[in-house]
Image (cartoon, rainbow, N blue to C red; front, side, top):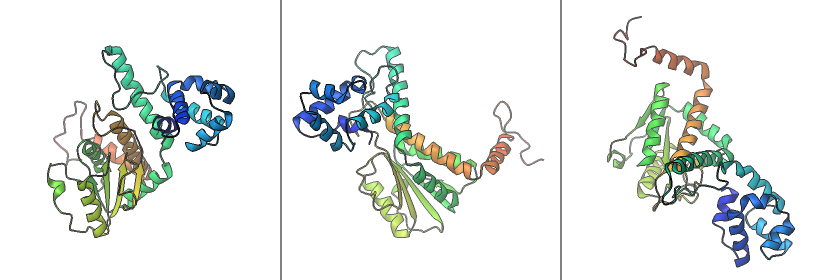
Length: 291
């Protein structure tokens, strides 16, 4: 979790919560403050500031300012982070709405880029690249992400399956496929449906990968591989799945690009040959089988 979100959700003593709230509301000012100035404005001692910083996993006040400075590039125009659940305020102008969403997308992408474990993502990409059969699993908005990934790797010739018809995912998973890898995409990864998939694949000995935005998913120690990014998006009471969708799409796009890169020249040729079957108007040529 990034420092800003730790501070936003911080729970501690009254004085510590006051410090956390001050940093959240005056981030730019804090960057220019000495520890003495910060302590004075919050009516605490220097040692209390250091202990507060250590409680959020930092070495001290200087480390806090360094981490905040690294995150400051997500405060694009208004010098404040966008609320992921309700990114627009009442009576926002059209221009303000447009700017808020621009900032929200950039903020989310920057957060993922800063926190993602690229080595783990590369490991997962290699597992999928070497799989004999890839099955994709997701519900609701996550299914849209899964279908996009399905289309991309299907074009490259991978054997991949994704049941996008409502109800088909409830069919028991009984048959084991040799060399299958199951990729489950889920924002919260805590539903009975996800549990059914994870247990079924585990029972079949299928290597299972989970990509989720929930740090507290009960399945993180059950699946074989997991990528977690906490978008801080609530499940209910939000305008839409904007931050989670952006984060998931970015992670899946990176995963696809890594897979593509393993056989770059061959994959470029595949896409080129596929493109030759379509003319400039996007209509399929009639003589597909004639060379």
